Image 1 (cartoon, rainbow, N blue to C red):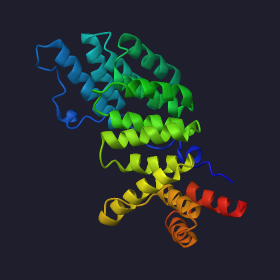
Image 2 (image 1 turned 60 degrees about the horizontal axis):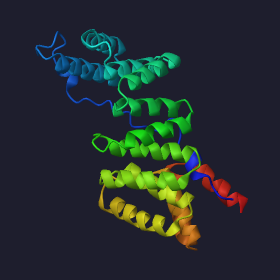
Image 3 (image 1 turned 45 degrees about the vertical axis):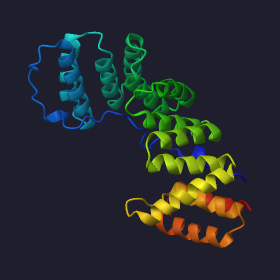
Image 4 (image 1 turned 45 degrees about the horizontal axis):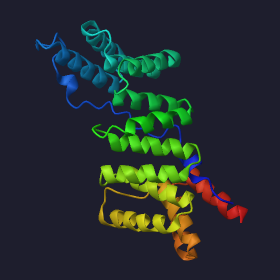
Length: 266
């Protein structure tokens, strides 16, 4: 039986790249910003609000976003950030309304479009999420474009489109050298698409990285991809070795259950 690796492995709880990291922002003075430039003040309040969202301090975040909106009541970044708060508080209809409003005000606000794509993904609306990430990926100046392509790939995986997922993961690898998430995702997607030669080449590169670095290790997804590659090549000894690793290290993983089902079905 052909294992639907991509559809099962891409869990809703996977860490989609939300792009709200604002290093050092909370350390800024919380009073009125001294800058006489309203645009800079608005941006600073939004950044501070995002930093508080990252720390789950929503009341403080809301206070600073409100200040940004006092400066500019059509601030797409502030409105999208308020959408993030609504999402975290379970106000999903309001969150979507705010994301859409932000994009109506500024259709080229890529970070907001990425936020909206993550929202749609988490609501199980994968086709809509995919379209948002496709649009966001077109902005060649966006500072987290690799993350957008990873999210695009995960959405494609949920829709059982491994070829599209593989291409998106590989694009992320090009944009951010050393991105292990993209590397493992590309291997798994290529295996799912039965593009074994390409998958095997990338898998060799991955295992070399793992052997050389203590900071990179196998995941359940990469071990299952390796098992499938080994079995496809007739290397049963290699497949058995990887299967033992999968069972010993990740006995409760979905990937181990998929492996057991794969063996049972045969």
